[in-house]
Image (tube, rainbow, N blue to C red; front, side):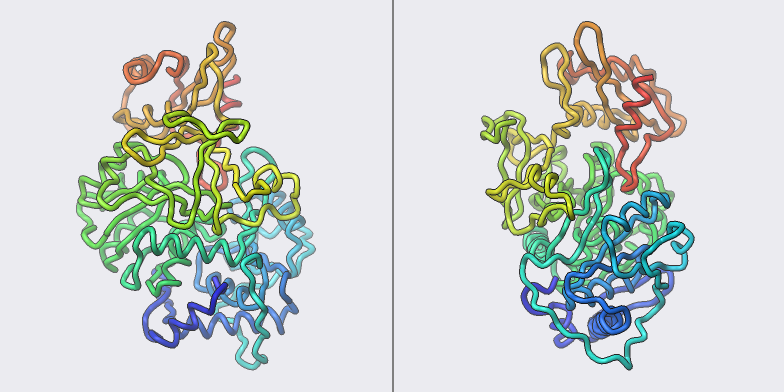
Length: 494
């Protein structure tokens, strides 16, 4: 964020009265001059008030608020590392993260205070409004390098214990540059950020890039579909990020059909493939819908969809960002032939520095040559761009053929009345493994499992067609809102 110069200080000098941040619920806001000053006061409080130095860590357990952005700015100037904690986690899970991160202090807002683990050994400080640092001496500025850590974001841990991805000043800076250039952001752009700030989507999809370019960010305390559509209309917002479940909730909102969405240049979905009916619904409202791809460890904004082609290229994520290399390889890191499925690997300045205190996990993910192994399977689409086929660890073999759940889920998601879909493997005496599909249907919809299988058979090779289909009211989610496949595998095994 402060790799070269200080973009917030620069905006404070050239556009001091331009609005940088707004909390819609409270009405509190910050101009760029006010944000610059608040960042300085946060740095003073971190250094003089709590004794933090470069390389120390400050954890924060709070809903989205102005103070979180000010904290990041102050920490960036000191070389301090911010560790946002997931307030959706249980006490023992939070305790494990605090033990791993070893922060010098834990900042907590009023809503999250009851979630602080019992016996917490870290000093806990209330995250008040403002920083009470006017009387303190200016904080010393640290020398910032590209490799200087700024954020430690813990992954969801769906395949093991959570890992703290170390995002550096360099990786955050270059993700913002890629986003600004690739998505053509300007100072006239504005958005509402409803993704939580313990998630890379909260910080790095639009918040930091827009603040770097001089735009305006509305910080929602939590996601509400009706309120999000109202904010788009009332504030004339120009762009919007969400995960598929957020866009599905907005489409089901009573406001969706009538809200004025004409200010939106585009919306972008990430975190998981978005079903085609959701994409079409937004295009029908005159809004360009793009499917993105990224991960905490690399960016997360890794691809760009050509303007106006989001519908024609539905099912793909577009093309690589300007400052990012992409390759698809087999299990031996050899490039796959065009049209074949391979693991997506990424290399460039947006790649993180590895995982906090997990050298083995870092070595497994990040090669000596700089290529990051995403574990995601991709294929180049015949008409250009890249398409996700699922996770390498989720792939299973049925009758000697590779089955990529992502391909099957995309077909399931395109069936009318299917809101969510996921496929996991189950054992089969003849074929080794076959697919078990879990779906959530629209309220009141009636779609028999046999009908779903028949529709899949008309669109997929026989070995890819799920042999079992189970309908649930809602598919289980992990802490970051993604469908939790370990739970589904347990259900399928029963």
